[in-house]
Image (cartoon, rainbow, N blue to C red; front, top):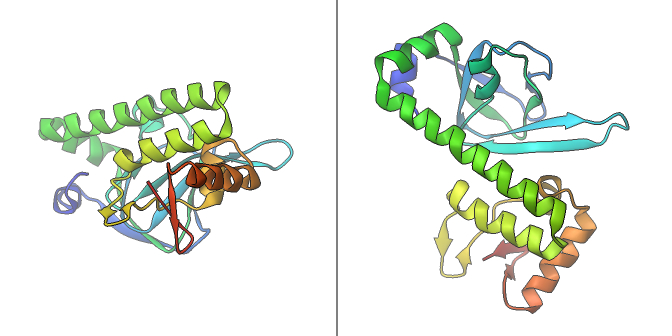
Length: 198
């Protein structure tokens, strides 16, 4: 999103996290801007029964955790490395100076936050009112644009696991598997070498 060189010019440092390592915890004060150089990060919460709720997944060149940074609030979720991940981290002061001195970067950040807000609004409506097949398909279609999934001769390869699809739609993994198989039978999705294509 923001060029690495520009972030480093304003004091960003590179940090590496091992798979399952916590980057920040729910309740921590937001004092840094984070952008992924490589790897994947998930933001999650746990309910009183210990069940995980996934807020979202973030990949290379994406940022995460900005809303509480702008609002001077604690993080509403945990950020955890899904795989070995390298991140650029810049202090809030450095980040705000960067935005003030580079208005075009401010627009990029606003567009990114608007995209996420739109996604949350769309998915909230889908999860509360629709059947599993519809939820899965809507998530896949939105993810093609949001995650920039690549297209090849088979279509768009959906680089989300069944578990991730379940976590993002509020469905059990078994229900996701059944929904995908049903959508394949209808010709809406393809499964090639266990990978889902749209």
